[in-house]
Image (tube, rainbow, N blue to C red):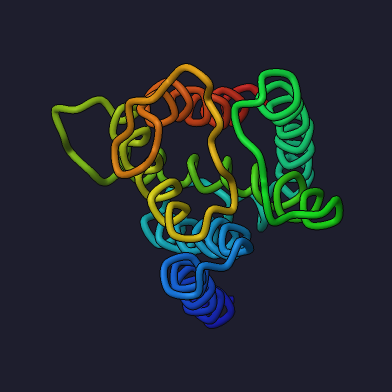
Length: 194
């Protein structure tokens, strides 16, 4: 079992790295799926070895729970994207056709971004002693980790009609309010789903 987990950890590191290289060097609009899948399992691997109960614990001990959480994340992905993309026109995916959108945004992107965020949050709570609140650290870290590589590949493009202030080519409203919402969703879901 331990050997399998170690192999999985190394593969996760490779997939995460490939996602980042795809964004920054290759400018691939498909980078994010690799990044969030690899990053989720890489952080899960680290948390597993730190004895933190996160995705590996759920996969090994509570499979039904992890499936429920995934489907909740999938439903939330549809709701968030319907509101933000179609109703308010806050962002779009210029390189995606319908298949790419369903696979890379709804099936992989949002759900595994939420898992990634929660893995980060658990790691910060358990391992980093700081004066800054763990939610705030999770918002800052994930906001930068997920948004800055996208400024090379532009898998998604923000089209806010009234928010022009940016940091690192990312609207400040995204790095603050947007990531506040994206961090609180998995924290709340993980606490509520038994």
